[in-house]
Length: 111
Image (cartoon, rainbow, N blue to C red; front, side):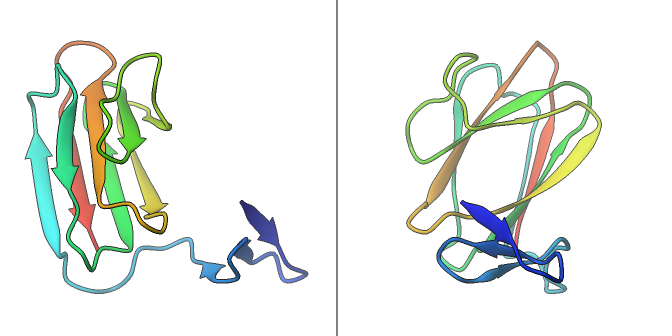
């Protein structure tokens, strides 16, 4: 899905370069959710190209698309206390989140 060129820059297989910082633009949308004990869907802004996900106190599972996320069916894990930036895959209009264990809070910032 990603390759590195001779300058150590990441490139998506579709040809576009991947940056390791979030765009320096105002957020398109923000979600703070402390009730993700079941699969919680966030519909992304149509202009969103990057999401920044904060797992505040507990691990959080993320799944791209509108299908429910579960502890055995997920695309990404955001460890507790960590911040991850994800490039939104082409054609994806939503994400689903669920806590790995009770008491998780997540913040999602769309850019």
